[in-house]
Image (tube, rainbow, N blue to C red; front, top):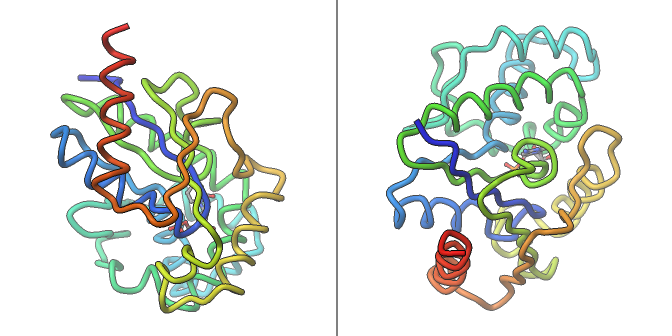
Length: 209
Ligand code: DC
């Protein structure tokens, strides 16, 4: 069992998933994409006809949902990997992610997951450095220009990415914000390996000190 965590936050398209995945592979640690969890709950609600604005019903649904994110995202026994990045989910997920009852369920599962990993976990999302793992081994905040972020999310477009950023940063429940002690990295024009290398150097310094 290990509680070592590299916590990564940042807006959509800032490179969180690619960097976190490569970092976890490089270190031999586990990887947790928390956005996929909010997306999986959203798919389940849409498919069951649950109103995503109904906070209590959504909280119950999140509490009961059986969920895994690897090797593919599954909810209540269904593979929803191909569905979680669809247009209808992009639109509804920010409402689901703003629900404090849903968040409480997801945060509990994220902490349980990390506590059960043998070496360590690289976790990425929006509230990982600030709420879920405020005592993470290292905290990273990734940014990139809106133009580049929209390009990385090629089927989504600047307006949609920007709408989700505003919703994620201005909501009441655990909004996206930079932790005071996070290392801020602008990934505009940088490749994944380069960013991963910088984080590994930071981790070495931190664990040596
Ligand atoms: O990273 P992503 O685009 O897959 O995230 C999907 C949505 O979930 C997005 O609206 C932000 C939200 N989210 C969140 O509120 N907290 C997290 N820890 C992860 C994602």
